[in-house]
Image (cartoon, rainbow, N blue to C red; front, side):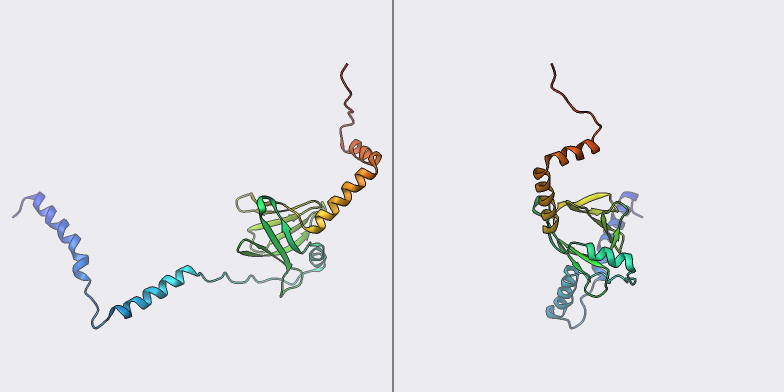
Length: 189
């Protein structure tokens, strides 16, 4: 009988060589036949199947009204990002948001504050449209994906509001007084 260290070394060597001994080449196969399945498997990994299209419920009247208030088209966002919003091609009352390589189906909802919420039907993202900008949020991680997204109609409305403030400075001062603390700063003595 061999000493323990030699038996352990022999067992280790046997374990290392067994997988190589178990692999025998298949009978009558050429390199051509082996390469095809590998190439197919590699290409299948590169293009994953698109996720299944979500089942969308029929939109009610408030949802249809909210969809009509959505600014459709291109939005210019901060950091030279952009997003495109269109009506869903198959189901009325739903909106598609295209950002980077994602196409997100959203349900429009009017909030009590007047903001328009575009809620991802999968529950992952949320787009909020207010008077002067829109933003895209990831609700799962609680982070903004896009901010300062401005549609041409929002830009036009902001310019009109700015022109109105310039044309009527007294109305602007009254609005600031209503929204402020009522304290008017004075120059120090």
